[in-house]
Image: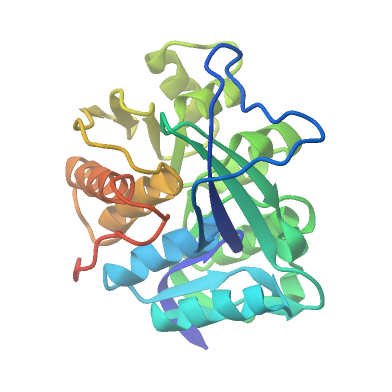
Length: 301
């Protein structure tokens, strides 16, 4: 049976990055109906939570698998080729149809809106996932059948000693009941807005931490863009202030931070060391285009 140090489970998409104008007065992207709009630049890259974090783990020298689902189109071929080149074992499946696709609308002030077509990513059945053993599972956001498969897989592998890291998105929090996964969770990483969605009664950081840890996770990390990062393991609180860096593109920054932090924990680093590694990953990514292009590459263990 295949054995890994960490296996990610989530989406795999092709990202199309489109430079756009941003309407600051209305705080929205504005596209007049019936018009043709020229764009300054168009770039493509492989994205999705599962592939982003899997590549990050693999580049840090961890034996890594990735559970995701792709279509039988050229984009699916590109996803699988990329995983192979990055030394990530594909543990998902292929199906007829289109691979997931995202259109990332970037503006000059580095704001962005993402239009996402998940494709087959939300339709992963448990019997499509090959048997494997792993020290850690890392779950990013999927819906429907795939989310239920995550729940089943987590319950099964937790009995074998596997630990679970979870990085839920806002749309997942809105649409699925996360209570069963949170009870199994060892590490929960989310931003302040997502924390407030899970703990609706609270706004203050300390109250959010108490609420989130009460849902089950042993370690909770809350990020807040360029503001203070906070973490609690129930015994002590930790804080880390991001550095001032020039932002080129923010897509993948959350995945980079989360994978860096979890990789540090997997490698036996202290929480402060793991926080610093997560910050290094995210600040490296946002300095350049693409969610993976500047992920760190060195042997962590």
